Image (cartoon, rainbow, N blue to C red; front, side, top):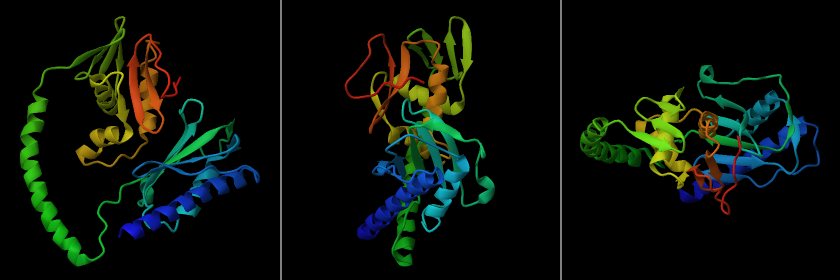
Length: 276
């Protein structure tokens, strides 16, 4: 099983390189290189390119569908096109096994020539087993473990809901987690439920690196829901709402995750600052 998983992983990376090749071909670029594909999370990969280029969104959609058509584990995935300069999302779409749930926008609008990276997030596939007998036996064990876990987890969850309102001071901003609001100079900025949960994690660990995998687990997976949108998209929207205070920012720590900074001191060395 381990050997087979690795083989499938290698085949997937080849298919992802093919996406980059076809996208450049659609863009009439026959000389630029597709750089090595990076695996940035358990089910997320990044395609980067040697030179800046321009493309039509439908070219990326067609290239992705063509290259992943024979990938048995690529029924559901989210594609995000990131600007290399600040990691903001230039374009994105989502594909689903149930075609009515596909989200494809901005077809026909050419993106300007720039340096782009393409992140592709696949939906986790769950448990894969070699034989049905092992699968049924595993279900019995998992059901028992799940029952024990739920019995122990429910009281703790109820306890957390009874905790007092949490208000955090972030520089000149005040963050009310229960009300899902940012307060600055008497002005109120409303946050979505997801933005509130992300910012609360940051506020509890200021100036500390928060791993991407931790954010995805605590925001979506712990609720039994698979994320259908890119985490980077929520981070980008949250950054814009924090712009009221120039001394507070969310920076990307390449290969690790994110960090919330609210200090006049600029931390340098391990990360690249990300202006929005």
